[in-house]
Structures are given as C-alpha cells and as structure tokens.
Length: 98
Image (cartoon, rainbow, N blue to C red; front, side, top):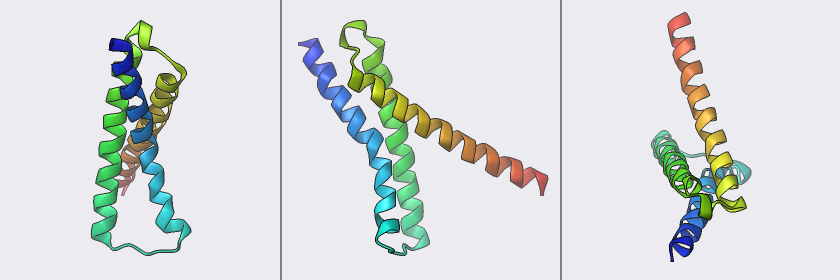
C-alpha cells in the first residue's frame, strides 16, 4: 500500500517538475504577456519547483520506493532549483557591483 502511495506521489512530482517548461508556450507562439502576468507566472514556476523538489525528496528518501521516475524528478527539480539560485545570486551580485 505504501508503494502505491509513493508511486502516485512520484508521478505527481515528475509532472509538477515539468510544469515550468510551459513558460516556453507563449514564446513559441510569439505572444507578448504583460508584466503582471509574467510576475504571476514566475511565482507559479517558483512554487512548482519548490513543491516538486519537496515531493521528490520525500519519495527518494524511502529505499523501497526509489525508482527511475523518482530519480528523474529529483534531478529535474534540482536543476531548476540551482538555476533559480544562480539567477538570484547573479541579480544580487549585479545590484551590489553597480
């Protein structure tokens, strides 16, 4: 029963970790979004990354529920998190240099 719960949770974590890729849809369709919509979308991406990282760490922590989906979700979420941290660090660095 626990394994089924972790399987559903890992699929949800993988799905949520891929949601930030939806940002490319307006770019590919050449749709210009207002600043408010861009800010809301960025906030949604941050929430998706944090939530998927949290869910995938919960799933990977258990030895019997570790699978390829869990590991892929953890890797994808970690890449997103490192990218976000790098953008924040770069913004802070540029702010202090100027």
